[in-house]
Image (cartoon, rainbow, N blue to C red):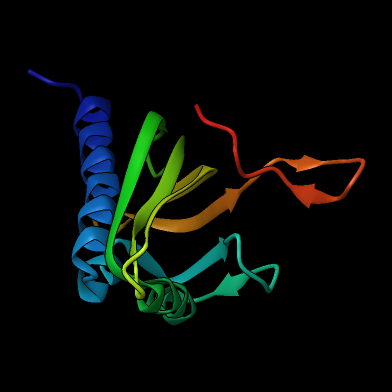
Length: 146
């Protein structure tokens, strides 16, 4: 019999899988169901923070307009679960075929997801995507791989 922590971790991993599936299908409704209404997102695009699920969906809408076909890959996901909050970190890569037909392998980012159990469901209340930067040039380093 699995412990409650194992059950919760499995649900959180399914939520991350839901992000992968939702992005691949360009399914905003599926993505919206994974985030808390008041999510705070530190995404790779300006501004410094995006507040609320609709702001998060606007990020996905912008990304989806660039791609005819899009996919998201997650590597090395680690999840730590408490009673009411949990967090995970991984490497993620958005890739696909651009609107002009050009295939792009995308770039790897570092991803962090913070979950809270809300009405019995694990939802993302905070996420962050980032790339390392070269301190001498101040430019992001986007050619690294996990």
